[in-house]
Length: 111
Image 1 (tube, helix red, strand yellow):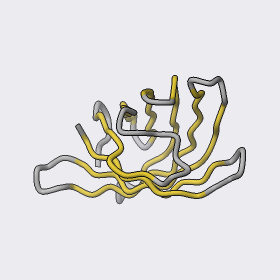
Image 2 (cartoon, helix red, strand yellow):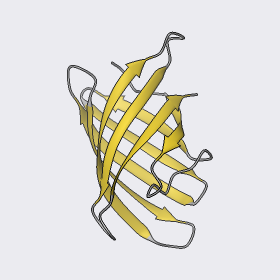
Image 3 (cartoon, rainbow, N blue to C red):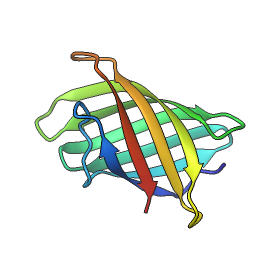
């Protein structure tokens, strides 16, 4: 499973998510290290760093700053799915490590 150079957009998210349909994620990969940047909607800029295992599952940490200047952090486990069109769908389970520490789920699709 290779994530490098892929763009993703959320198509479903929990109410406690700060992402929206306007948030774009750009992934890069070097060996088992995966990084991403993201922005759009209420998010001014975000960064993800993580590791991918042999099954393509990502263990990631994220941080971003909102348009209101709030800094948010959390962790996420992402399981990939290859769709019939060959593009990836990402099933995310995440938790904030700041604020109210809510948990949530998101579904992202490759653009």
